[in-house]
Image (cartoon, rainbow, N blue to C red; front, side, top):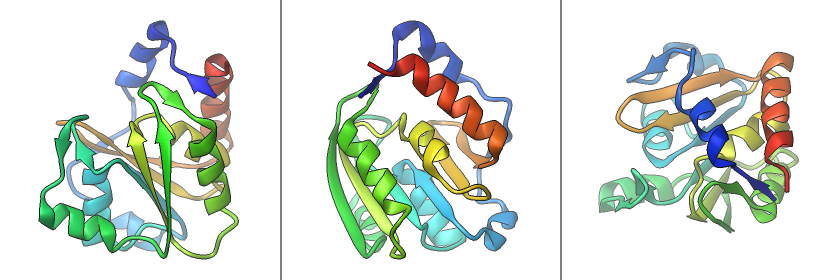
Length: 165
C-alpha cells in the first residue's frame, strides 16, 4: 500500500503542466487514454472518445454525487468493470492490481473506487505503456494531460517510493 504523507501533499497540488478546460485536439490521435476523475472522464468521453482506462469514484469534489446524466455517461464506459476500495490519501493494493491488470486487457476498463481515486494517476503513469496519455482532473481548474515517457515514469516512481508503506 502507498500512503501520502502530509508533508508530501503540497508537491501534488501544483503542476508546471498546462491545465485544459476542454479536451485538447491532440488526444484524437492518442493510442491509449487513461482518465482519473469523473468530470475529466466525462469530458474525454464526450469530446474525444471512450478512454481505455477510466478510474472514477462517482463523485466530484470529494463528496458531491454525480447527477443522473453524468452517472449514465460513466456507466457507458468500459466492458470490463472493477470495483475496489481505496481510502483517502492512498493507493491500495487492490487499486494497484486493478490498474495493473487493465494494461494486459484488450477491453476498455472502468475502475470504480469506493473512497478516493485522486492518487491513482501516479500508479497509472508508473504502469502505463510509454506513449499513453494520462488525464486527471484538478478540481475547479481543469484537467492535466501527462504524456507517459521515461521521465514521467521516473518522477512517478520516485514519488511512489516515498509513499510505500
